Structures are given as C-alpha cells and as structure tokens.
Image 1 (tube, rainbow, N blue to C red):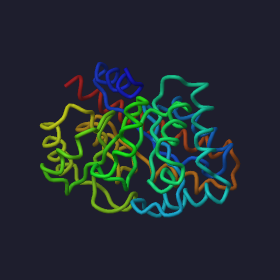
Image 2: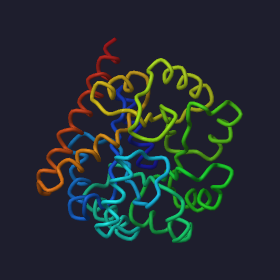
Image 3: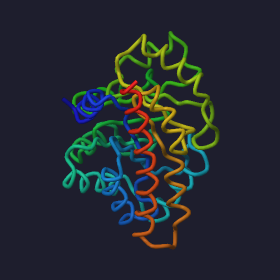
Length: 276
C-alpha cells in the first residue's frame, strides 16, 4: 500500500479529514524551506504538497506566485527540490509528499527521468496543474510503473463526461478546486462544494481533497465536515512572506503555529462529526 493510501485509510478509521499544507520548495531559501518541511508533520500535516518553483505559475494567485519567485531568486532548482524530499524522507518515512506544479520544468528534465528522480527521492504523488488527462500519458505511464500517484484536478465546471476522463488513471486522491479562478483570491461556498462532492463521490471511491479559498481554521473546519482533506497554501506562504527578515527560527515557528491551528480545527470538526 502506498503512503498516500495508507494515510487516508488510517484517517478514515479515525473518522477524520486530513490536513494538507502546501509550501513552495526553496521558499524563502533552501535551509529555511528544509526546516519548514521538517516541522510540518509535528504541526499536524497528514500529507504535504510541495510546490515546484516555476516562473509562470498560471493557476496561482499573487501569494503563491511570489513564493515561487522568492525560491527561484534564492537559487531553487528541480535538483534542489528533489534534495529537499530526499532529506525529508531520511527523517520521516510515513508522511506522504506530493509534488505540485507545472509541466514545463518536468518536460525540460524529461518525463521519465523526472519520475525516476522523484521515485528515488521518495515522492508519493504528482499534481501537474496544466497537464490535462488527454495529454498526460507521457507522465502517467512511468509514474504508474514507479508507484507514484497521479492526482487529478476537478473543478466546479467539470461535467460528468469530463469527470469520467479525469478519473481514468487518477489515483491517490482527487483535488477539488473549490472556486473558479486562481489560488488565494476568493472564498468557497460551502453548499456548492458539498453538492459537487456528492456528485463526484457517485463516480469514484478516491478520497477528495478540497483546496483554493481555504485560509482560516474556521474555513478548514467547514471543509473537514464535507471532504476527506483540506488543502491550505496561500495563507501559509503568506506567513513566510510576512516573516522575511525575522530569521529562520521565527519563520518556522510562525508557519508551525498557523498549521497547528488549522490542523486542530480539522481534528475538532472531524471529532464532532464522529460523535454526532
């Protein structure tokens, strides 16, 4: 069983949703990024989404775009992203890591070579935002052979026929984009998300994570009531931006504090759901 499948099976047995933080590899610099990554499981992360820095992250709002630029300006590369995962995996063999980003850097490296590197480093899943199911065989086949999950995106505009294509080859979990637009710019409508998840669940047994538009512990708790996981990214990378200049320890402490509050709200809501 993969780390992702094992983690969601464990959480299902506990009756609670997962907390999935997103951080950008190399933001604001390599050593601070490594310290943040190492701190996340202790701050309540169940799965970690690690952004691969890219100069044109088209699906991301200002906060995540800025995190990519900070990382690139500090010398982030794909090789260093893999180094971060490899180092983390030496210290933590249970927490799943999903690389999230865009196809251009993957293509530049070569899809098969990229998958080999990712598997060797200890990556568990891939979310390639701009690679649709019709065109991802180049990545899907080597990833399946390496035991890496391809996590597909579903959006509010995904109709049933399209959903069938998205699900064909998807594994690990589905990522439901709760808003139309880019990350960190709008908030979700709980009733709309709830209705969308009910429709998707008729077509798949994969866990469903909800992201985009979740910034506060209260919003994370709302999602925990209806989804299998809550993904938070922009709020976390904003903390990194705000604490620049305060030093590595202050950045890690502030990120950990926010993540702990988010994780606690998800656990509390999931516990209430179980008791009900």
